[in-house]
Image (cartoon, rainbow, N blue to C red; front, side, top):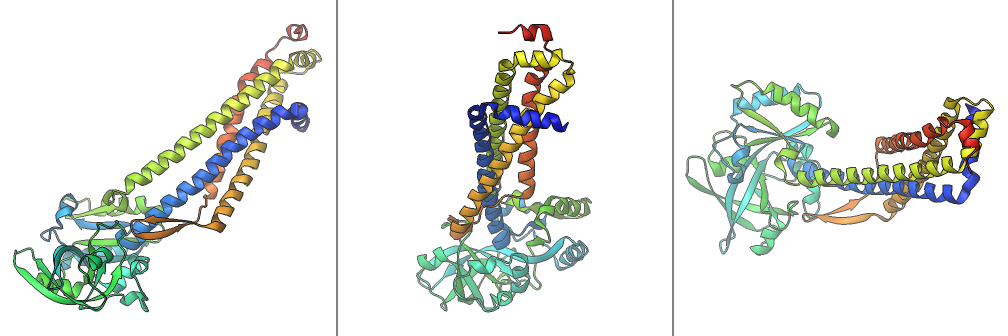
Length: 410
């Protein structure tokens, strides 16, 4: 086998220009996949991270039917204290769950006594919210000395666009007016603690208050939780944990539903488009490798017909001739892949040094392109398999040549 490898490598470099051009084309395809894959995967990870770590959490639990009417923020589909305790017991018994945060979400009116606007409010326990969406404090403008106490009773975090629209400033007192599930209207006065950047763009009107203030405003004897956001120990176990919790809630008498961030956010479609683009680029790579190696191996067989006849006439078995040409195609794919991966990783390294900044919603995000080791291995394996596949037909043709016909070829 060693002799076959040596002869195959020697044959590759008999026509250095053609081999170099073909190898360069394959390497370019690998570079394209590595660089584009690194950029696309990093962009997707950053985008998903902004959504899950600053606002939504990885998973959410609601009462059945709530998600279907989520645009109206209904207050009649809430979780009672006993139901919340049941869910908390389940979550604490699930080791993959790192943290969770109960929330009350509702619509209200915000007024500075001169102007009024609508606002979507999330009432939270600051400590639990910070552990569940740990990057939320990055959306708060100004210093946050203690992330676990980014919000106190009697305070509100107001989105930037409402601050500008109502000419508000930090420290101002404003009035919140809301209707509870019985239809009665109530109001509370709160102080603006800070301004938040809105992850969902300039049209978003999402503010945050303490759950105690929501109880007062909505006249609740005890918190009636609308949703529970969940943060996992490992994000890649999202589907398995979701399936596990859904099985626990599968009984007809259990009025709870589990949804992943993908089921709740329209940005999930963008993530799927990114995956599709990566798949298309990989398909282009496979096409490049297939055509390139098939072409060079066909030319190699055609040019060496007399040589093939000679080695067949002296007793070289067909399987050895087959392996000789297969090793040539495989070696070309392997050398090109190594070169392409090294160049691609080098380009990603340079991009990491320069940093790529982009805006997601109203948040500035720095993109640090990288590609998982598993993706590199996948690319290498695909190129190797395609190299063998592309080289098989010419190699098989060479191994089946009759020595007399091959020697007589001009």
